[in-house]
Amino acid sequence: MLDKVAMLFLLLGVCTALMIVKDALRRPGVSPLITIAWTIGGFYMPFIGWLAWWHFGRTRNSRTVLYPHRPDLRRATPAGVFISTSLTASGCVAGAMLALALLPLFSQVMPDSPRLCHAIFSSLLSLLIGCIMQILYRRQSHQLCWVPAGIALIKNDLLSIIAWQAGMFLYLELAVHFLLQDTLWPNQLACWFMLQIAFFSGFVFAWPVNKTHLEKGHHPSA
Image: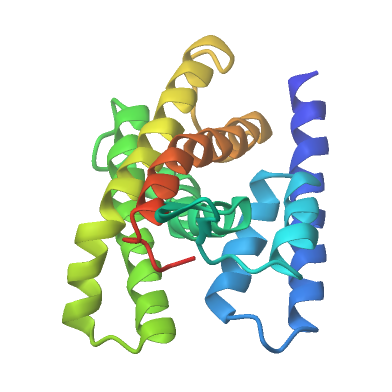
């Protein structure tokens, strides 16, 4: 039963991602990195990702705005927080998926504990690819050199990436223990389905961090 549900949601995720990328490619003004972020978001948010793209990605301005009655108080628009969090999550999702796909190779380092092996390599790859995505976006959108972009990443984006990883691993560990009988292997559809849900859990954890950064004016990635 779980495999059937997993197949359904994974296919919905792939279809949502393909719909987003097809529509995004018709809009030449959309940043390639933002297109990647939206596409990856569509995978772990089946159908919801398409609705978010339709309402936020195609038409809305994602910049932070000011409260009209308090010019000194900033608030982040839902579009801004969604896009900012999606950008944070995109690199992390890619790293976590790569870690699971390569788990048979990585597990040779720690053959007795594939779960711990996945946790370590997933953390490293998610952090690495997530940081690369943020730096590339800052270089592209703000014309920053590598060093200033890296400094801005540490100051403004690193906490978001860590929050995403915390949410992802919290759900994944619970799912592996209670639903997957302590088994995590890339040839099982249920593992990919649990990972898909874990990505959304990470998105939820990273949301308030990105919202706070936007309201403080410290997160230009939106």
